[in-house]
Every structure is written in C-alpha cells, then in structure tokens.
Image (cartoon, rainbow, N blue to C red):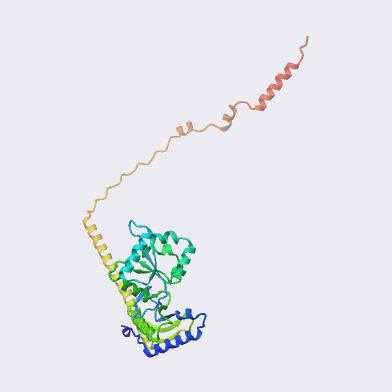
Length: 357
C-alpha cells in the first residue's frame, strides 16, 4: 500500500537511525536519570508535500507495544441505571477481570467525574496521575466539557473503546499499545509515537514500517504524499529515514495544472449554461408576451366629453363681499385707557371748585 503512493523505506537505513538514536540516549543517561531515560518516547515526524484540506485522525495498530508496562491507564465509563458510582465502578472492574483486561489501573464513572473532579486543581491532578485515558464510546461526546482544554493541549484526550465488544481484551490492547496520528489542515507536519527507548532496534523498525504503511494508505490525498520522514526522541535531533524523489515535483506540478484546467473548464461550462439559460428564458418571455397580445381584443377608444368653460362671478357679488376698511373698524372700538383716565381727572377737578354765594 505504501509503495502505491511512492513511500519505499530502506530497512537497513531505518535500523541504523534507530541504533544511532538509542546510542545517543544511552550516552546522555546518568545514574540519577536512568529510569527516566529508559522510558523516553521515540516518535516519527512526517512532512507532507501538501497541506491537507481536512483534518484527520489515523489509528495505527503496531506489532509491538509502544508503551511500557509501568504506564498507568484510566477508563471513563457511563453510569449504570439504578447504581451508585461505587457500584458501577465495581461492576466494570468485575467485567474487565472476566474479559482478561489487566492494563487498566483505575475506573471513573461519569457521575464521579462531574462531581469529584469539577475543580480546576482536581483536573490537573487527574491529568498528571495517568499516562493514558480511555473512554466508553457511549459517553465519549460528553467528556470534553468536563475535562477541559489541558487534556487536549497535552495530547491526552481519552480514546473511545467499545465496552460491549465480544473481544474486549484484544480491542483495548490494540488501543493502548497502538498509536494515532493527528493530521492538521493548518500545516504540513505531524507526529506519531512509535516506541520507547527500552525496546530493541528490530522492534522499533518494525513499528516504523507498519506506521508508515498505514499512514500512506489512509491519508486522504492524491498523488505523492510523503516529502520527508524523521525519527526523533524528546531531547534528540531529528534523524532522516526517508526523502522523496525530485521527480515527484513534476508530478505535483502536472496535477496542479490539471486541476487548474479542470476549474477553468467548469467555469466556462457554467458561464455557457447561464448564457443559454438567459437566451432561452428571453425567448420564452417574448413568446408569452406575443400570445397575450394576440389573445387580448382591441378596444374602441371612447370620446371624452368636452368640458364647459366656467363663468366669471358678477361684479355685484364682489362688491357686496368687499371687506370694510380698517379705519372704520378701529373707530367702533371702546375708548382706550388714557381717555378713561383723562375723564376721571376732569370730574375730580370740577368737584373741588367751591360754590359762589
């Protein structure tokens, strides 16, 4: 499958890179940090030719477990009807023991997650106590609002598992020991974990080959996919294990030209169809108008009556209705206050005159 999309790995070259990386990790290890260096992650860094149009998450099954046995796994389950959170916890512990699942260290029902891990500090403690989180697929969509963004920033979001499966132990083992690749539509680089430093070189190389094959087969892109593939740890430099040929550039350019030509052809087709549609619609409208004009009978125009001229009003009526002059109106008014005062003073003067005997 990988060869169909132009990804051919040289096994000897991959093994040399893995051995060089393991030697680097051993040289950097000390007595105090020996335990930490033994479980250091080994990851694959993929560089794609094109940025994908849509984001995608690819599940990658690996032939050898890429997690050490010391990793602690937490499982979120749904609330069983007519059971408390402690009873549901006991119920699922018994179920896992019957199915032969031994990798899960703690079970947290959904109700306990909502109540006991509601504060921010409790969520941070939960995130630091476990290396991996699994979830019942029946409550997987309800978890993001209760977990918070820190689980997704640290890339520890819970992976869904079908707890009603007949092969529960096999499915959980595949999810825990497998890996996943998150392809983002905002960049051309993505990373997947494929092993740890305590594994042998052959086991790491087999995991790398399986991961490259599944990624090349499941990526939703056409033509050449991989540009570069590197292997690295958390503290090391990225070592190249695959580089694409330069001939892929011409293939990509031809594909881009073909896509541009197809787009232009589609645009021309749409424009032609629009023009034909407009011409056909115009012809239809004209035909309908002609039919309507033929159906409507021609009416005889009616002569409008001649209006008689209005007679002018007689001069007598104008004289009768003429307004009175303003001077005449003012004469009829009552005497003003000054004239009244003058009359009063004259009467007082007359009273004061003594009578002559």
